[in-house]
Image (cartoon, rainbow, N blue to C red):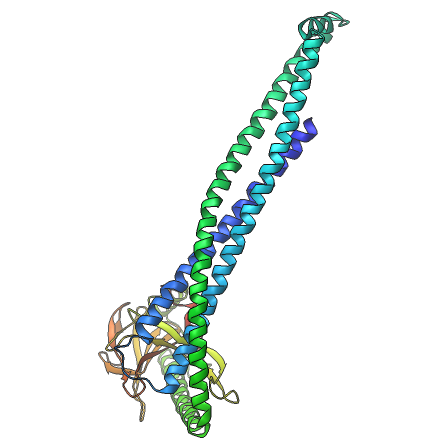
Length: 405
């Protein structure tokens, strides 16, 4: 019986740990789903608002591709949640069944003991059991055994009843979550229908683009050349800023890294400590264009290496500094829109495609300060802020630095 009790205890412990781990995962999945739902809401408001300017086909295909990828992610997360809920419910149902079986065995054993005690006049048997002891010490031990056995049986029964009740309550809660799962499944059906519609739109747009591919190939190449030119200019300005700063600090040869004063070190360390928690450079926005190497959506032969993220925002949006710093450079782009570089110790944040600039080189900037406005391209029907982060002269993925919102 003692072995049964130990196995029962270990089983309950393992079950409790498993349910707890699954519940934690469920919370994380729900947080992710809510984040994606907020992103979808932003996408619809910023990219698919009917009041926005007429978009070019290239812009439409980019926006639609982004929306499709986010919706697919939403469907995937929702499926994970539903599957996890199913596993949680099944696990607890099996555990309840097991505990009920154990409880019934104990009841049967207890009933058999009562019957046997009654038939053999258990009170008299107990007395005889005690009186037949060889000495007082043995009699005392036998008395303790009788009491412990009765208490032990009772404790086992009570423990299993308590645990069964707990698991029934948990299963009741999971049954409520099953309703949530059914709701998730219904939402997924709606999302899948919307996805099918968007994929058809995507297919029609791609067919239209492919019918006049030469025109779009020229556009793609032109955009790539412009992007490469801006990249080179920003890289040049950063090298110059590092060289000028190091020269001022008495270091003539530039190593591609800032020589930091004690004050610069404090700012740089503080900036680094805020990775993942930096404020957004616009009040409302979604990351339409990702950092890093990506193939062109319309021409798979073209691969671009993006040092920026492209944040789609609303027309006339203010641009805000993500952290305290100093305006290092202002880039005036030929046949393009200006950019502002702000230094934060050995880090730089870069704000590109601006329509208006409110600061000048050398200005001290505070976190959240408005430094300009984003340019709206009416021909393409989009308002995009290019945003970068550098550590010395190395471009980093800004998405890892911005807070979730």
